[in-house]
Length: 319
Image 1 (tube, one colour):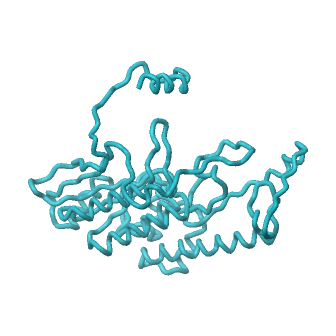
Image 2 (cartoon, helix red, strand yellow):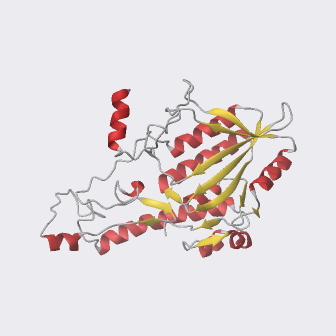
Image 3 (cartoon, one colour):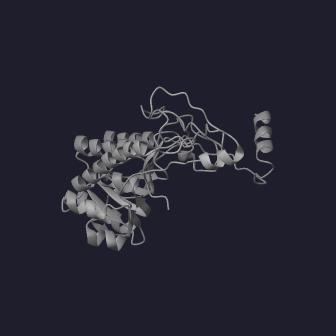
């Protein structure tokens, strides 16, 4: 313990606080229910489930822990709400610019499955940002609400590639790739993107974009696919613009949202609860999907962790 603490001090270069608060923790590492808004005795519950940050199908490491796996954590919380017959509805509070296509799709599917198998309504409540993949998962909900200051939309797909061949040429460095086919190294930063490679990636992007448009059209019955495509040019919208265009259903505060959901389940005395983690562990089949692989390139570029493992297809708003 002493050695580990000393190592921590050394690794942080003395930047730690002058004092530490040591709090006893439960040995049980699963989610623990916490009451946020008290209600009548034995009143039904509304589960408040947060989805925030970049959506990735991997653990998101933090300074002092391995971090959480966003997809796994969402499923674990939904499973708690599913198992509790006293939970009558879920508020999905979203604060995310989106993330990878895979993570967005997995989270969307789990929300749809929860609604179909439980019959419990799921209401999306957008906070600061619920764009791209954040809007994708909101489309799985029964109703979409947002704050007056929310930024949403950014319906579309992006794949960011880098070309460092010019820099390498100036440095007198050349990359030699031994590959099994002409397109095996497509998208490599060490090769200039050919017209054929661009066409291949554009086809994949178009297919994923079509899926995104279909999801929005399915979740927004008043918008047909043609109208969604008109709105889905990648731009973001304010809450008032999104309401006028039919991308959301209402503008409301958090308190108003809770009251709306209470009215929906027919009990104004319902309690609002959340699920908190006393300590991390693997709870379901998403938890061990793998950590972000890190930067394997010889050239270091200070980019976000979700981008360091190479090119990815993203439902992401990243201005």
